[in-house]
Image 1: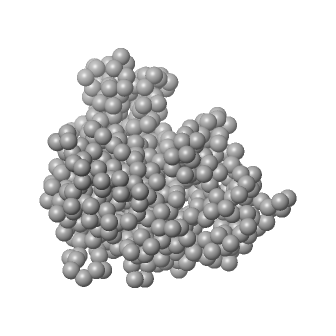
Image 2: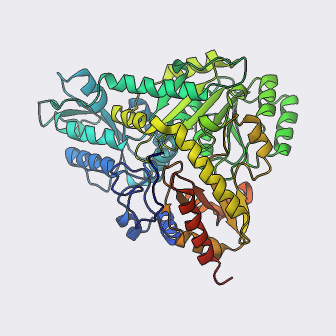
Length: 546
């Protein structure tokens, strides 16, 4: 393995990894810095060199926004979001119209004037939503939950093209011809929208996700759909599966998922959305009883395993219920990975955030959806996804992703080994009340049901200490990278509830069992002995006065 690195903590706001222009994680090295991010304290915001792209504005996106403000002669205290597609902009505008019917918002399209090259017109065109301050919270919620915002590399390309672009809007105040009539002459860095690289990603995923079980056909690349972000993939599936039947228009989320997933599903126009937060046998029993009594659902979403509790649902039983009561099973396997688990025989749809360990480098976003070609619902799901599919995955993002993923299989195996060693160490420490890891939680038997022959238990673990002050001290002194995201080649820690549920920590603890002082660690490629030494040092410092 050539990517082994030393664990280290970086100053607040620095990119993780350092000096990476397109990093999707920023250093939050202390408990207080994470809390300050939740409160959006100005000192913290002023220190941020970058951010997780769905949580705020990447610097490249902000530069494009600033240029749009200047071009349209509007004050910067007005709200502005930028999308790469008309569909995403229209959905954002529809949400603002529903939530703020008394406010006036505008859509502005920027497009290269003729005669621009077809590739230039395709990727330089973008859509701006302008909104008043009163709409800001709703707009940013949409940006965060659905992930449709323009990517950093894409924003840079559009910024370069902006002088040669015309603007179009229903409100003529925002219409203007291009200041420069010469379109971009710089040679493109890709060919045919990076079609070859995107096909390489799809083919790679198809090979890895295919089932090892006898009787299952290999997945074809035509059954893999690529999206700019993992949440885009989940949202695309959620929207595609909304049925016409009101009776069946219910989505069930089984188990406590990543924080934004319930919002994404609930706000995709189902008549009903139900969170079975414990992911327990009792909840599955109750679901089965209600189905037997006539209840109908369209789809059940779950994670294998879940983030951050690392629990695995009973997929064979869920699959049997789905077959009996005719609903779809859609699973997020981002933490389990194609390498470790073989879930295709039990599910209809697999959704993955490629941003995480598939990339590993923490400098590009991406998402995928895989359809089970032997699903009874295959034709319907494939048709529904295809009908609304638009390739908005910017070519340079795809080219970066395919390069990063070349050693994906090796990296997963090394992260598995490192995480297992850390999990064993932490589970035995007297200061630890609960260690969440797929092999150490009661649902291990369900994980083992879907674990591949040579599969491991993954790269993610979560720690609950007996004392809250121990958790805070441990996090503050732990000398590894700290901040949002998971699946990075370097180990990355964060106080999960404080980051993901800042304004709802009591609810997350009472409803989902997510301890408000939980520390989550995504274990990377560092040498095992280095990682263990750093964690042991942090444990010693955190418990020195105990």
